[in-house]
Image (cartoon, rainbow over all chains, first blue to last red; front, top):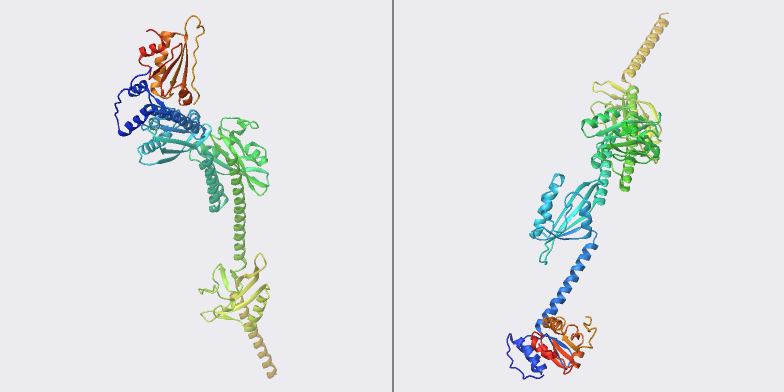
Amino acid sequence: MQRASPPLTLSGTEAERGFKRAILRLVKGGAERLAIEAGQIDAIIDPSSGNAILLPKAQWALNERKAEALARNSNRLARAILDALGTPIVVLDVAGTVLSTNEAWRVFAAARSGVGAGITQGSNYLAVCESARGNEHVDGVTIAAGIRQVIAGERAVFRYDYAYDSEAGRRWFALSISGIVGDDTARAMILHEDISERKHGELLLGLEHRVLCCLADAGNVTDAVKSVIRAVCETQGWKCGRYFSMDQSAKVLRFGESWGIPIAAVERFLEHSRGLVFRPGAGLAGRAYLAGQPLWVLSGTRDAGVSRTALAPETGEDGAFVFPVTSGDAIVGVLAFSNPIIREPDDRMLKSVQSIGRQLGRSLQRLEALDALRRSESRFRALNRLTSDWYWEQDRDFRFTQIIAGNPFGSSNILGMTHWDLPNVVLTDSKWAEHKSHLDARWSFCDFEFATVQPDGQHAYYSICGEPVYDEVGTFKGYCGTGLDITKRKRAELALRAEVALNETDARLRALAATTSG
Amino acid sequence: MARKKKSRAAPDITASTVVVMVLYVTESGPNSARAIANLEAICEEHLKDKFRLEIIDVLEYPRRALADGIVVTPSLAKLSPSPAATVVGNLSDKLEVLRALGIRG
């Protein structure tokens, strides 16, 4: 069917008109031209090239369809990526309403309590946060404020760490809120990363460091044990701990030190513990001693090997955590902690308490040695007081470095002097030369006597004993010794000698007189 | 894009004439979509199941259209019964379509 070509009525922009003219040149038939003019044509096939040329509406529709398909694919990809991520994620609109969540979030929100529990697509995250009560109130309000700032574009990212207590123990999360730019509806994305393992490790590392500091600062066994118990209790949230030391002579564990939070029940419990003694293998402490390993009784459970009644003096009605204190291969005591909630320790916790047990054991050994040394020194000083008037030390050049129990030479500062430098010393050069030769030969000497001239012109007499000092590799370090003020004895001797001499003179004179008179 | 080709054959066409048609379309085009809808309505009303229709997407098979003398889409070609006829456009003029198909409206 052929029709006459209709007149063309072109409209639109010059480009459109040009395109239409080009199209019409391809079409010879009147029906086709009419259809084109009526806007009923989608495409024209160029006879020369065989290609289909889409008219604008069809081209636009094709583009739309492609864009929609692309968007659908893009959405599917975004959803797949979100679901593939192990971190719980929610996406919010400008009002804080949850537009979408990923699979990890759905598991997370269903399993947890606290801020964010039960939030699903369509929930309002801001409302949930702001309605949080109890321990989560502060977290909820802070998080809601952060979300508002990010949605408003006041900040690109808001980060916040928070914790909550679940039945399985305390859990920590790092919350990160990031702004979304370029989407019509999505404004913010919230990630909750579980950082419990890292945080738990940090706490235990902090505990180990605190224990080391406590032990470094402790001046005695009591301070050391109490400070370690306190550090463990405060870090773990336990209410009290006790130390049972091993009495090697009696072969029993005896209650030694304790620390607890200041409440009546704990104080009573610790008071009742005084005098407790366990044989190795008896009770939880005795079993931990025998096993050489940490042992625990979880809250609300019954230990298979020890009845609750038997444990009552050890744990009260609570759970207990007990671990040995070691020094080298020997177990020197047991630390026992009690708390209403004791949870199964993980490997990190077990390593930590073993480390603390070793640190405390080493420190106790050092402090006990220090105590023994103090007692020994005390005995030495007492003995020194009984047998001599002062104790002295000299360096390798025989200069005084220390005088203990007073300065025998009056107010003069003699540190840095040698014996022969002492003020107003009286001794012949030959005697000093002989003494110095003994010192150079590193000989011990005893009852070496010398005198000094006192301000009143009289002589004071001293007797000293000394012996060489060597370090651990045998290097000569100087001399140490004691001194005795023998002035009274010496003056008495001199007086006696003078009297004897006088008597002898008198006798000789009398004998001479008798001879001459006879 | 897969070839879009629909064939609808009547189970018994011995008693009446079967109209054989080819509709050339551009799958994404709005006029093509309208032409398909209009033709389906006409077939439903006037031919029931006594027709065979093939729909060709010229973006997929432009050579086929050229070989059949088709230069624009949508275009409906009636192949049989004779005489052959072609209708150009979105088939919104129902009378013109019926005339081309040899159906008295």
